[in-house]
Length: 172
Image (cartoon, rainbow, N blue to C red; front, side, top):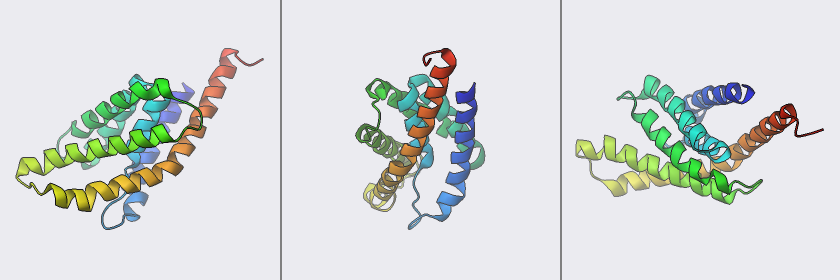
C-alpha cells in the first residue's frame, strides 16, 4: 500500500514538474522528459506490470491535459514501461549504465513515435531537421537529467524495499 501511494505521488509530482518547472528550464524549446525517466525507472525496479501501470497513468495524465488523441500517450508510455520491465531481472544496486541506456533508448523510441504520428502523418517529412532540433537535444538532456533523477528514485525504491522486508519479517 505504501509503495502504491508513493508511486501515485511520484506520478503526480513528475507530471507537475514536467509541465511547469522543467518546461521553464527548456533550452531552445527542448526539455528533458521526466515522465520517461520515471516510467523506465519504475519498470526497471519492479518489473513489467509496474512499468505498464506507471506508464498508463503517466500517459493518461498527459493525454487529459496536453494530448490531441485520448489514449495515445497512455499507450506509448505503457509500451515503454512494459518493454523496459523485461530488464528488471538485470537490476543491480548502484549500476547506472543499464538504466541510462534504457532511458536513452526509451526516449529515442518515444521521440520517433511522436515524430511519426504527428509529423509524418501530416506530410512533414523532414526527419533530419526534427532529429537535429528536437530528438537528439532531448535525448542528451533527458539522459543528463536521468543521472540525478534516477539516483533519487533508486533511493526511494531502496527505502520502500527495506520497509517491506522489515514489515514482512526479513529483518530481526
